[in-house]
Image 1 (tube, rainbow, N blue to C red):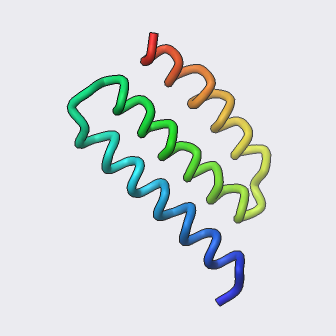
Image 2: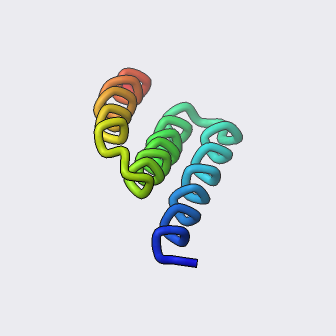
Amino acid sequence: MTSLDLAFGATGLLALVGGLLAVTTRHVVHAALWLVVALLGVAGSLLVLGSELVSLVLVLVYVGAIVVLVLF
């Protein structure tokens, strides 16, 4: 296993845990913050795979716009 495999597994685990906690929490604000963690995990996975543009768009559109709308 290379370091990229370990980084991909770690970011995938981060996305999985963040997604599960976003779905199971009872507070809307906490769910939005866990959604940010899950989306950053997916963006990290995309960075490890070498897709920088898709990762940047994911962070800008989803984390920057949709989650902010949920919080406000």
